[in-house]
Length: 343
Image (cartoon, rainbow, N blue to C red; front, side, top):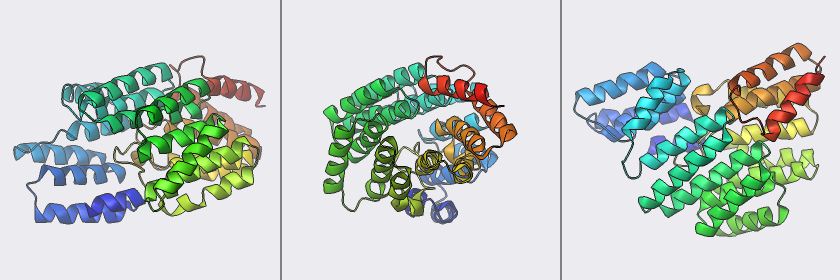
């Protein structure tokens, strides 16, 4: 489990070393292959992920988690057929099928298809409930509420956050909901969730260094206090490269929020630096929607700095990724209006 602790803290080299040591001790464990495969992905060794899976299966070892890892690798290698194959392999497997539905919802959101992402999230939550994983189901809904809040779908964001909290108040579900409420400008519910998390999880790393800083930052930015939004993210800095939860689909978000805060502060250079951190770590970001949104943030940052050529290029990258996006997304409409004003 040491590899996992380093992963959460964002130290991928040490995570990799621990995973390799575990494998040396027991090379006939499918769990140890899973650890190696995750580390290979995050360190950009995509071909090695597939090689490890093949070697494992040659030993008659397998794991229901393999398709989840290989799906993201296929995404990173732009292999839709491979992604579909991996998704099909998880159908009907309790406790795994739901995760694949949610991973697929991430791809839809990254492509700007939030209607499809919402439907896939519903299927993930339903599958989790059938597997008696009520807290996981609520987490999916709350996680989706953050995605919706990031792109201006505020009514949906508040609805999903409320639904998640009505079901169960786990640390991840309430953490996501706190962020979503803050993004949507629902100050009362955001503060209520922040206060509850602060009291119930005073020493939890994910809560204290991820969820709460992002929620507080979003609240500050929505109130027009960009300086406070930047400062609120300070507790996240030591761990911001790591993954926030057990599903490995919420990495680098504090960096994205800091980029947004710098945009609010009209500091184009600093904002560009944050969004570039995300774009430079594609193998960690995987199919998270901040993959596409970081391109938009970079375009806005360059526009603030007066570099029109770079701004247009970054906006173009965003539009290419969202070429099949739902047309009524507020962020897309705003991006098109901004691009039209670039000289």
